[in-house]
Length: 491
Ligand code: ADP
Image (cartoon, rainbow, N blue to C red; front, side):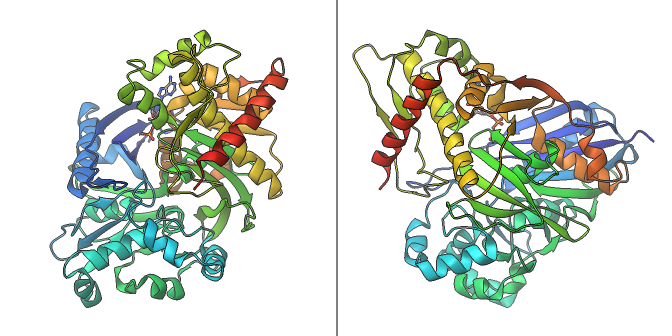
């Protein structure tokens, strides 16, 4: 016994493999960055072969480094960047076009044309989503309409569609399995999350042949066997990265909520068995489906969070490492009224304005690097507050927040977040919650954990941030200025 679990975490900028022991303790990980392609204004692509080769490399390296035999590994769990769209030929195994990444805005115009009140309502009622280039459907339609011969091949049944999870399962199983999980399917804008089926009305709307679509499975499910790493290993669990983070944070009860701060920021509230339709432009989504039973989530997606810090580092050369920001903000002038709106790739929830662009307001002669850095970190906090307020208006009661992702190593950020939101925030011991979530799912599948309840007991808090109200008046004023600033950037 005491078998290990491997979580494959295929993210937007890198692929990771993470090794856990049978008690969910993280033993080691391997990571590889891969290339981002920006072939046109607002376009973002990945090379499908590089997605696969980076996943293979990190998993193989980790297995070899620990001298693991396939029999030492109980199961593999997969978590992935969501919505990113791939189409490949099932005979040759080759993708017919690069992966179109979730951040890609090339279908803005197409979505604008579709966006009328009647269709918006139909799409929201069925999928919980808003019509936006973010989701897979318009990206898939774009490939079929723009790659020569694609539509004819698809109609002949030669082409397969998948988000990154399906593509990886297909590669890992040597082309035997074409499957996705309910959480990833719920981000395509083609899946009816009430009825649990690919929706024929939506398939007609986007002109997608049904034969291209993967089978939609539970998050805990035997997806198949991989022989890619020397022996046979089962793939036992799968979830999109943000849903995996919700699971990794042990948010299994209605009302539990987490916020992940990586490239973007994604808040998900567990809404239990209820598909709550937001009146405030938040998304409803499948949090997870286990034993055929759906648990729903309400989600707020912010496209730019940590990537704004990367922009300060790489674009503006303010500092060499993101770690320096924590000390830097202490040098900011507390009376500074600088407001940064980081709409570098448009604004997500609750505004959904793909054409909005970033701006800096309130600059004075003495504004400096520290003030702009502080205002950038604050902007991510204010965006979180906007989401939580929208959730409250939709009826949610939010008393505490679990936080994770690469940014939460920054304790200044976490404390200020607690202050501005005026609720306690909790950082877990392992902040790699996406990988933890995938490992939990695979662990349940392999019989290591009996169920989600037992997994919740494994979750441990590292630090609690208690809100301070010392500068509340000033903070409230600044939040009002933020709201004014956002209005000015909307198109
Ligand atoms: P992803 O999984 O989306 O690639 P991660 O969860 O690895 O992202 O988080 C990386 C992000 O966190 C980067 O965008 C980086 O700018 C930001 N980041 C890392 N360390 C800090 C820090 N100390 N303060 C603020 N932001 C940070």
